[in-house]
Image (cartoon, rainbow, N blue to C red):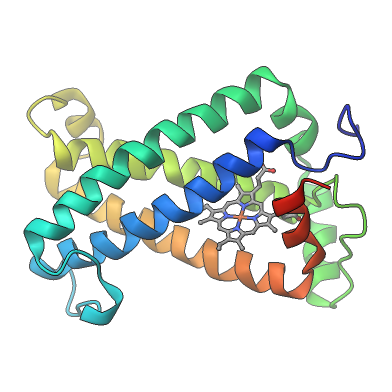
Length: 199
Ligand code: HEM
């Protein structure tokens, strides 16, 4: 099914949410990497040049400030997406067979994106997947931020230490999504224009 106004690929609210998300997420990632460096989970640290905040305290301030922008913006995006019906006509129905076909076409370099108002199955799964990763990032972040205030959530996630790993792996998967997403945008630059102009 097509969007109600077929000439508008992305409504204004969607474009605002998308770009606010991109900026807020950049702030969260770069400050998050500085926070990680203060107590690494693994045998590596992020290069200081890729981090924000200068030191642990500064990075935490950036992270907590951006957290509100990112969280409220994400809630607005989800609410308007559901209420406007956009999620339904953009992301549904899902089909494993169509996903398989699209992956095969993509591997052959033949996956087209001529109609910008419709997402192919790879895009649908990727976008829904990154939204779910965002939810995972938020829930594990709540446990790390206010561990005492969210005891049930902490238990459900397997404890404070487990929440740290969940937060790290959701972040890694989001970064992987962003890299692939940006490569795709470079391959089909028209989509970038539509994400600015709406048409
Ligand atoms: C500078 C960075 C970014 C650029 C240039 C960019 C560009 C784009 C473009 C051009 C589209 C439309 C794709 C199409 O019509 O086929 C899009 C959609 C989307 N992008 Fe990004 N993006 C960026 C960052 C991000 C980030 C950080 C996320 C989340 C982690 C994200 C998540 C999404 C989602 C979920 C959609 C689908 C939105 C919807 O239709 O509801 N993007 N992006």
